[in-house]
Amino acid sequence: MDYRITSMSAEETREWGKQLGRHLRKGDVVALIGDLGAGKTSLAQGIGEGLGVTGPMPSPTFTLIQEYGGQNQGAKVRLVHMDLYRLQHPQEVEVIGVEEFFAEDTVCLIEWPEIAEDYLPENRLVVEILGSGEQPRKIVFHTYDETWDVRIKDIIHFRERLGGPQ
Ligand SMILES: Nc1ncnc2c1ncn2[C@@H]1O[C@H](COP(=O)(O)OP(=O)(O)OP(=O)(O)O)[C@@H](O)[C@H]1O
Ligand SMILES: [Mg+2]
Image 1 (tube, rainbow, N blue to C red):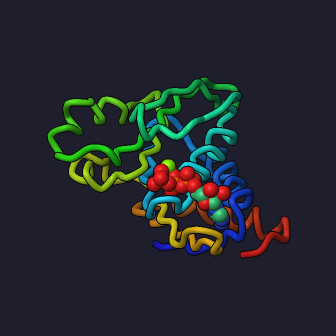
Image 2: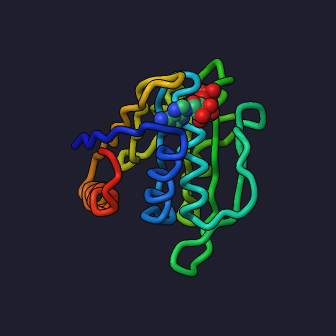
């Protein structure tokens, strides 16, 4: 299923991320798709906040992979934030060990996931952000199984109850 929402500002994108983060569990993989400056890192930072990460979450553009300690309902969660923009060949996905982060104790967020397409688990959540600059963003949650449908509907209903713009 596809679920579409609108975000009018970086803060709102971050807030959507925060709500999403609160619904993430160990083993989840979230692919973040969108052009340069679309808001993938902004959303990821919100996800980190929702998972209780304290301290800054800089863009992993140069480090490729950043790891954080988070928690969900009191249980520790490892949060991994990747940016594969700088990879040139699919073999490099294996070299940096991307698959090792699709692990039971980890929530894995991947910016520029296209090069790793063949390695991504089937039940990933794909979040596509459309728009750039100061334009509002369309954010599309592409789900491939029911556990994600339940969670995304919950997040959207929660935001509707707050009366935020949709
Ligand atoms: N509605 C919005 N949602 C997200 N970001 C927005 C929005 N409106 C404006 N912005 C701005 O767009 C920029 C998004 O930058 P961000 O680093 O999150 O993008 P990115 O998709 O991670 O880019 P890159 O591909 O370079 O990693 C920020 O400067 C942010 O303030
Ligand atoms: Mg980024």
